[in-house]
Amino acid sequence: MEMQLKTGNPHELEEVLSHDASMIRRMLTDFTGKRRHRPSEEQLDAHQLTYKRFRSRIQRNSRQGPAVSTPVAPWRQQSFEFDPVCQQLQLDSPPKNHESAQRVLQDKPQEAALARGVSPCEAFKPSNTPCCVDASRLPAIKNATEPEWVWTAAVKEGRIPQQAGSGDRRHDLQPFDVLNEAPVNLQGKSVMKLLAPSLLNDYYTNLLDCSCDGLVALALGSSVYIWNSETRALVGHLDPQLGRPHRHSISSLCWSRDGRALCIGTRRGQIQLWDVEQKQSVRCLLSHLSVVGGLSWKQQLLSSGSVLGHIHHLDPRASTPLVGAAVQKEAICSLQWSPEDDCLASGSTEGHLRIWDGDITGVKRSRQPVTTVKQPSAVKAMGWCPWQRQVIATGGGWNDGELRMWDTLSGSCLTSISTNSQICSLRWAEKKRYLITSHGLPHHQVARWRWEFPSISPITQLTGHSHRVLHLAVNPDNTQIFSAGADQRFHIWDL
Image 1: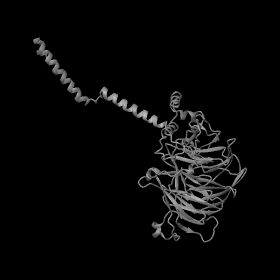
Image 2 (image 1 turned 45 degrees about the vertical axis):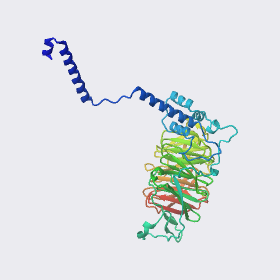
Image 3 (image 1 turned 120 degrees about the vertical axis):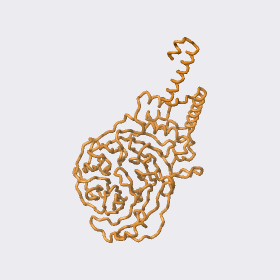
Image 4 (image 1 turned 90 degrees about the horizontal axis):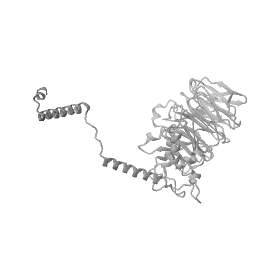
């Protein structure tokens, strides 16, 4: 280049500079890699037009709700699903700043109605048209896709009770098959032991409940088995549709107070309502975006709590079931309405017991519980005293082991007693005036207590499980206790 510059030929100089510039461009290209493709202006305009068309179509469809006289479709087919899903995204996500929240409410009048404390059914009720329908009388959906849950009736065949030494035939046994039946009632021993295979060994689940008609529901794996405690016969079981067991890992279940509907909560936030008598699904609700940690009924309303700390109040009879919500910081592992339906208790994994008032209408992030108390471990074992108003019992976990009685009005602990073991579950037997608890190490026992204000005293310890006793239930006349343990056994005890 120096020689060419000395000649002073401008054309040669221009060619040299052009050649050097092209060489530098190629070197830079090799060093940085290929440049990303930049879409043309026409492509950008086309993409923006497609997105606008898609957004307008979604907004147009979301304003077209089904007629009240039409059957409620499964959650995948509801044409009005857009607004409830937006509600759930708003409720199951962290609170945003006030201005953005106000913009969301302005764009979505249904959420604005909830925030004002107005039921969405009232806010969107058509003229001269009732907003709610009787879910138990909904006609079958003929054009619907295959249900995600399938009812299977039990095969009625006589099975010979298997004794402890018959291990060679254990592989033929089915859920609720009798393993051992005591010929006489021995003090502190179970009267019958049945098989409960695939029972999830998870402290934070609630997988056993008994209805007012004596039907026991127990979740085993991805299925729910229904067993008649009076006839001691298996009625049937609910199973996920073939090919989708992973979608229905069950975390919580409970019966409605009238015993007509069985409510099942899954780890994916779904809630299934089943009419066991009619053997059909009543409704499927996508209530949460996380694990359903607790379920409880208040007359015809269902309350559910998630591990994100969100409490949703649902009316399954309404086209838009969400009627109210509240939020707490910790994960919810237990939820229960008081016998008078005036207070809701929620237990958290961080050891907080919160008492909420009976006003459930509307989405209120700023709502505060009436009372909050703290214990050293998770509040999973919890239950209201049926005969003493405003008194609730809680059981401590592995690092605690204390059985406590609380006055929910003052937030004070009335009394406590050490059990020296993890308390996994807790139930009241109102007719016997007993409190029943189930435990883990070291004895894996079921214990009976007598509560007489201001003291609580032990009565009997029932032993027979080889691993921690995760779940408890009591039959309607309070004559028997049902327990399910991590040893995959289901025991029946006489009270």
